[in-house]
Length: 49
Image (cartoon, rainbow, N blue to C red; front, side, top):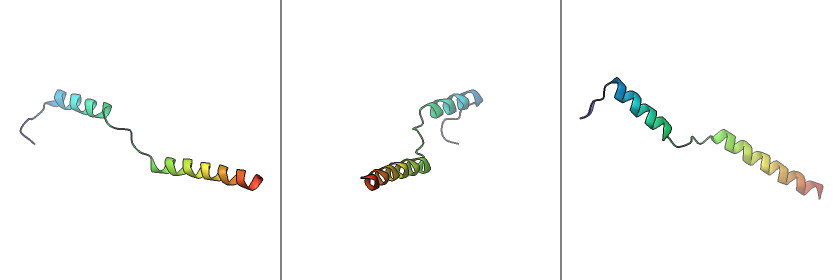
């Protein structure tokens, strides 16, 4: 380990802090599905006109 070693209580506190401050995970599949649905809606509107 590094210069500063944590006991189990300190490790738990650090893990909790990091979990709380972690940026939101980017979900690529969900984003692609959203783009696909929007594209299909536009395509549908164009064919109706």
